[in-house]
Each structure stands twice: as structure tokens, then as C-alpha cells.
Amino acid sequence: MDTKVFDVREIINDKQALETALRNAADMLAYGGTVAFPTETVYGLGANAFDEAAVKKVFEAKGRPSDNPLIIHIADMSQLKGLVKSVPERALRLMESFWPGPLSIIMEKEDRIPDCVTAGLGTAAVRMPENPEAYVLLKLAGCPVAAPSANLSGKPSPTKPEHVLHDLDGRVSGIVLGRTCDVGIESTVIDMSTDSPVILRPGIIIKEDIEAVIGPVRLASRKNSSESVPKAPGMKYTHYAPDAPMILFEGSPSEMLSKILGRASEELASGKKVGIIATDETLDLYEKSPVLSGAGSICILSTGSRKDLKTVAHNIFHILRRFDEENVDIILSEAFEAEGIGFSVMNRMDKAAGEKK
Ligand code: AMP
Ligand code: MG
Image 1 (tube, rainbow, N blue to C red):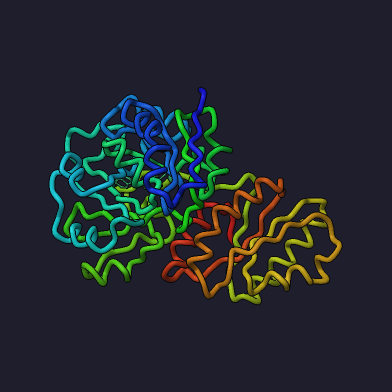
Image 2: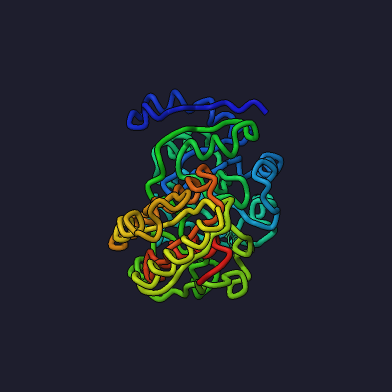
């Protein structure tokens, strides 16, 4: 397929120019095409949510299993009417607090939404993104846009325009090249379709942020969300996996450091190229370690400081993709404390790693 590229990186702050540049991309969406676009969380691959054939092309382009539902993106509140049966009062309060922004809200769906969008569920996840390119595109398209992340199924979610080109050029109608995604991990997903709200997927908006607005909510456990919450079918799939196997090392910072140094030297000795996911606190310690100095081929990347988990979330998928580019044979990663945003980061790292130590 010939993919049309809409490079708006030079004009992201000029709303008028964006409208002119994205009119054609919006028409593609409205008339049955598939278009990848930036949001503040990760890049999405969209299709008109009311157009069954178009939505099926999204699943095809990604190689996405058909039982993994999509999130429907809207530009303004008036679009909710055709999508959900009703907006529960607490859901409305969440919208007022967090929209536009990185929160997807699950509600009972209108019959008009094709089954393929929601994988046959009676509910739909809806989100109003904040990213200006996404806003202009959705506004001009005039239709709700069903969009999962714009990666090939199983690969790390794309947070930079070049990630999308790498995965989807030639497989979709259009790609909007905009800014790097601020948040860097996918939206928080909360199920508001029952009386007891539950966070099915953790994100940058955390449990405490939500509870400050609507009171107590449940959080699906870190492990095996698919078993504890059968309503989130997509979560049973391995996600985000880099090409090389990844091992996650847990423990205190010094334990993680020594376990990773030990394993790295073994892997290097057997001729492997090793990738290490470090933090700002440990980067130097790996780089200067006598255990690793001069020993074979190694690539050490920092996700950021342990004191700044927003930055860690922002960087994590990009770093996983960097190791693909570096062609490492194995990735050894430090873990984070599964608290607050750390819980959301660890949710992604658990899915990327095949093994824990
Ligand atoms: P992606 O945008 O690629 O992260 O995929 C969207 C994710 O949102 C899915 O994998 C599900 O976990 C979640 N989701 C979307 N719609 C629903 C729904 N109706 N019920 C439960 N989870 C949903
Ligand atoms: Mg995805």
C-alpha cells in the first residue's frame, strides 16, 4: 500500500497551518482509510469507529488479534451521544477532571458501534486526547476514531514518529508525523460500566488521582490482569516485547546493580551483545565498573532518575526500541518499586520481560 506521510513537525504550534496540512488525512479517516497519528500517550492507528471495514483494516495492518478491543477517540463531548447508552455521573466527573487527557473510560456501548471495535463486548472505551495534532485531525474528520497503539502487534508502543514509520509505512493509508509523545505509556483505562469502578490498565493518571475525584476504586493486580479482570481481554497478550529476551532484576538498588553486573559479565564472556536498562543513579556505576570494562559489546541506557518516574514512563518504550536497533542478544533491566507511576511502568516492564530474577 502507498502510505501518504503528513509531516507536521515544523508546524505543531500553528493551529491554522495544522488544519491545512491535516485536511487530507482527516478525509482519509472519514472515508474508510487508516491513519496513524500522535497522541500525548503513544501514537495511535485510527479508523472511523462506525465503519466496520475500515476498523478491520486496523487489525490487519497491526496483525492484532480480533478479541483485543480498541479505544474510541473523540474531539468533543457531543460525540459521546452516539457512542454510549449513558454517561454515569462519576464518569462525567472523571471527564471534567481529566479530559482532554490520558484517561480512557469504559461505558455501556450504543448498538451502532460495530462489534469488531469492542471485540464483541457490550462496553466501549472512550478517550478525548489532548495532543493538538490529534485534536485537529479528529475535529476535521468529524467522526469518532477507533485507535489502538500504532505499532505492529507485540512490539513496544510507538512514542516517536520514526517508530510509526518503522512499523507501519506501506501498511496504512496515512501517517501523521508529529511531536514525541509526552506521557510515553498508554492511557489509564477505567471501567465505569458497573457500580464498582476498576482500573483495568494503569497509566500516568494513577489510582490516587482518580480517587480524589470519585472516591474508592479497585486496581487490577500487577500480575495477570487478564485473570483477575476478564473484562480486559487484550491484556492477556504479551505486549511490548523487544526482539531480544529481557530479564527484569528486582531488589534494592545495590542488589539489582550487583545481580546485573554478574549476569552481564557471564553473557559477555559467552560472546553475547548485552543491553542494560539502568537509571541515572546507576548509569555511571555500570559504565565505570571494572567487571564490564573492555569486556565485549555492551549498550547501557538510562530510563531517567528513580526520583522522576514521569520521565521513566516517557522513556521506557523508546529505550526498548533502541535495543532492537542495537541488535543486542539479551536485555538486563533494573525494576522499579510498583507504587504510583512506578506501578504503571512495572506493568509495561513485566509484559516486556520473559523472566524475573
Ligand atoms: P491499545 O490502545 O493498543 O493499548 O489497546 C486498547 C486497550 O484498551 C485494549 O488492549 C484493552 O485492554 C482496553 N480496552 C478497550 N476497550 C475495552 C473494553 N470495552 N473493555 C475492556 N478493556 C478495553
Ligand atoms: Mg497497544
